[in-house]
Length: 304
Length: 304
Image (cartoon, rainbow over all chains, first blue to last red; front, side, top):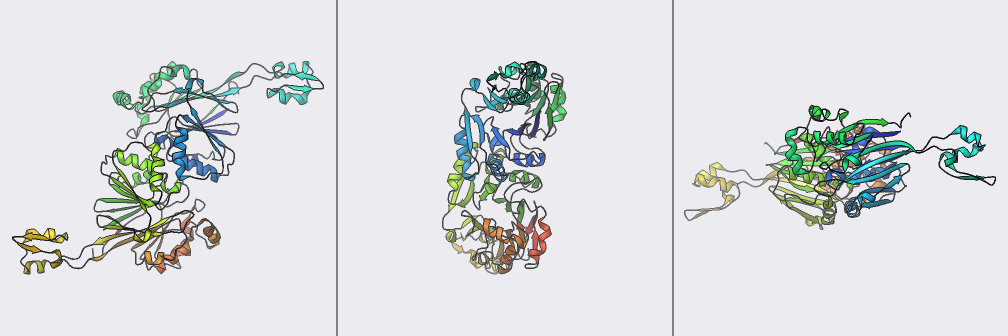
């Protein structure tokens, strides 16, 4: 099971009723955030998921509306009692950006590790059972789209374990994919564990034009979160110029990628009621949601 | 006339219903801000005073809750069409802090001048008729309190101007304290202008223990805006430790400085209802206001 929340759905600047776009994922006590602009910590406080357990923050790029909330988040995480290290992931330049911002938060009670993504195709980061991958976006500066895949182990075959006379006190270890030696006999988890099952896949793309590799990157995702800076078709030229998307482009990507659900986000401040343009996306991809601040979902494994 | 607004009244971190402490002054089309933490631009948007004409931002110090909103404010000011230079004022280190933060806002359509205050006693900055002065505060890092004095010219003596046969087309220049030569005769403004009259004085002190020089610095102010991080007397030890004040200390300063009005601000996030402790201050200084976000006041010159 994977909990998903969008802390904000705005682009460019925070508004009274719309924080900047930021994603939060929660699973097995692990917390993962994507982007944190000015005000993100306020939205997280309202949502109530807490600050202490944020293990990873991923950044799409370093425009202020995607990172200016970092000093505040880090200080609030520190005040909440975290002492375990935190990992930041983003395009090249992350260390320089972190160092620059750190002039206003010189001391933290936990270590921060910055991981800069150089080769997007080869990048993979595991946080417990979650694999983070990236895809190059197409924006004014280098920008990354993210893929999150929560793996699911195979099924434990209790009948087989019994028939093989494997002592019950070893079952838990084997279920955790560990091999065990007991009374001189070695038991491998493969003996009783089925093949890895389908996991949960969430993809996140903001601040980008549609990219050729994206349909494949988001293929069969349970949830595709994609920017829709502008709703109406007439804004296409503007989207081209500023390297953003209109709703119909996000929907086309969702269709091509055969995803299960699309959340639109990252609306222009000049788009106060994005839901008006729902049809621009829904006529192309039916399962579209014009997302709003603190929309949440609980994504389940198959037959969970 | 001087318009005053507190954009926020919180300390440490922005909350759902309380932005971080920030002051806005407006007079003769000039706008002046003190501190801008995370979310300040949202509050200013709600207040509706606009962004384009912010000429000066003063910083008390560089803890994140007082400056982390700067990148966002600068970008929004830029988007609002400003091309005139902006001035930032603060303790030493401002240029380094500005440079650090600028990693997330590399390009602005206007120039930013950073003025670092080294010798507080000698510091004075004029923005039109407003004089900005500072006083050393007593915090964990170097911090400044600010004084704002809006000057008021003397009265123009029309009868005297007539009796001296000064041509009427020269009156406006003389009223603006300029000397004029006309038909070989020199006219000085002193001939027709009375002595400078009492102006409007606003003082601002957050993130500080009470300082000996402060009562004199705030002497007779029309409005004294002072931190009250904690309400109750029992928090005195905490105030000492973290270099903040309790309500009664702010009120004592207001009384000693013989100010006209006190606004309390910069409340701890652990103080959700500061108004409960109103009496702690009011029993010492009657004209106390437990300020709230976007409280405004219109301060008038005497007999204006």
